[in-house]
Image (cartoon, rainbow, N blue to C red; front, top):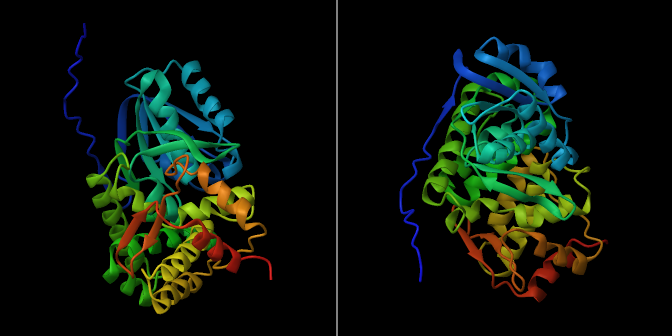
Length: 349
């Protein structure tokens, strides 16, 4: 005996990404803006001049990757319960990737899901973290291991927020732009090699190209069952770097830059990328003062940490490797000895 539940329906999760000065918006419902003290101090008054709502609340969580945890998510949820939010209510993620991920995750689980909007304030979150619906938090085992796919209702990318971004944070965002160019767009990579991102018009165009690249990939593979995994180029190695340094030494984009260098070295050893192409990527990362080296103290320990990656299985590790510049290979058949030989080259001298 069996009963069939017919759930074969198409859900349209499409949304718009606006890259421009935020236009005035009114919400006829309860709205909570989730932010941190740093972003609030710099930009909250600007945002509040653009947004009105039936009821508007501000939820402030601590600033930093180390606070991307259950306690912070609980703080958001408790505030929503205290203010009697319902399924028609709205959350606004106002900050960088940490705020966006946690706010989106809270939205995905509050009363089994409410709407949220991304208003990213860092370059990294504008070109990457805010687009695609990945939400989540960290735990003691690693980064983003708890989360959900929950698409925003819209993404509002206002270049105004970048005017106060520290140079190091800006460079971290450029790392994610380079990541997308290496894996999917050779012409874009070549443009970046000579582009002047201090020019506001050029920067806005670069943001648009990066967002278009990611959006096209997400549209083909929303739940990361195939090609979307390629957007994790640099992340498999980079997440281990973050884990080993307790998320304190490197910004996420900096760890990804190191991860790209390690992935490129692997690709060179496998004959997927030339030494010259790997050097071009390294030079572009260095152009933006991104780290391109990391001292691995224990290659075996580094290797075992790969298995905490969401894309890995009990017996294999998925690696995202560039094929030249502009193409990518997703593989779980990299020989352990080859990977260890790459890690050993980054060991203590």
